[in-house]
Amino acid sequence: MTEQINIGNLEIKQVLYDLVAKDITPGLGLDADDVWAKFEAILTDLVPKNKALLLKRDQIQLEIDNWHKAQAGKPHDAAAYEAFLKEIGYLLPEGDDFQIETSNTDAEIALLAGPQLVVPIDNARFSLNAANARWGSLYDALYGTDVIPHDNGAQSTGKVHNPIRGDRVIAYGKAFLDEHLPLVDQSHADVTSYNIVGENLAVAMKDGSSAVLVDPGCFVGYRGDSASPDGVLLAHNGLHLEVQIDREDAIGKDDLAGVKDISMEAAISTIQDCEDSVAAVDAEDKTNVYRNWLGLMRGDLSEEFQKAGATMKRQLNPDREYTAPDGSTLVLHGRSLLLIRNVGHLMTTDAVLFKGEEVPEGILDCMITSLCALYDLRGLGKLRNSRAGSMYIVKPKMHGPEEVKFANELFESEKGLKATKT
Image 1 (spheres, helix red, strand yellow):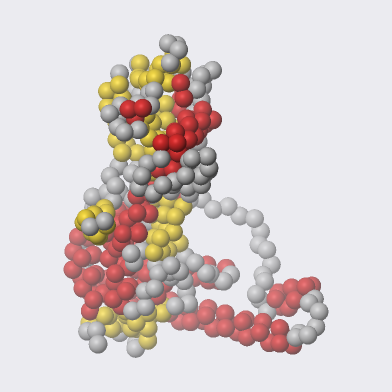
Image 2 (cartoon, rainbow, N blue to C red):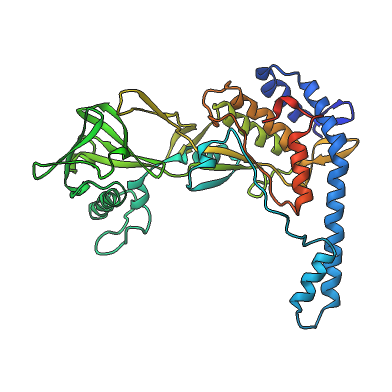
């Protein structure tokens, strides 16, 4: 049996207590036992409310079950069913229009429309892969999928490069640039070099002419020497791509402009999931979940694994630095903005007992994941997640406004961990 630590009315599994006491709180200047005492205050206030909400769920479900049993064999009457659902409080009247103002919100949430991943946080390697999916190779993505047809000699042949398929990938990439970041009366397929003159992108063509972007403002930075850059950074609708140049590369040596790849912003945000995609059934599992989130918030999560007989290591990608057109340094986020999905109101966990009963897992998730996020919010980690100073909790499976209000009470609890409020 897993050992436990008793604090007040709490029985905390040793493995979880040790994570908080030895790994989380020391770097934050917090006392672990004081944190648990404040957690007990949250539980004292919110556990009865949580139980009442779940009881209401059960009562509504029982009435719905009984209604369907009574209607067995009868034609469905949609109007009668809707009236019944309103009568029992399952369907509520639509409220008045309202507005919500937010602050300290990162651009990935407030301004940018882009792909979002969901990944089980109990697997460190998967979590790291998802966090690092902010940037990806367009050429690799095209080569490995059926965006490029596998016909007329362009079949994918596993580890052996197929030059016919490769040529199609490059042609697609140049056509992509022509569509979204076009040159005036020219094609990126005919470019022989990209370089920077003053604060502008200058493009040399194979016919000896010069070209410029239709929208010069799409050029936002470069890597390397301005006269012969290693990368040209372009932006479209707030998202970036880097035309990577290396005339010694296996692909770049055969390209007119020496382009070896096009690196693009892809998954701009990722939900690290404590809930649906995770099987965290006991204190050890929950502690592993929290430990991985702590590593992500401190920026030091890493994972070693074996692949093709070699030891590989995953860790978080650094930010990307460029020279802006005006000569200043431009830093772009190297990783997805991370959100954390806490468990909903229903489930309980034996990781902590309160007065002998398992605590609501979502309340425990809120406390521990918020504690871990303090490393990011206070700038104590190796890398930053939120540059706006926020933590993003995804709260699933809430049934109606009362349960949403309850989640707000949890996040804003004045009796709880004031240091974790974001």
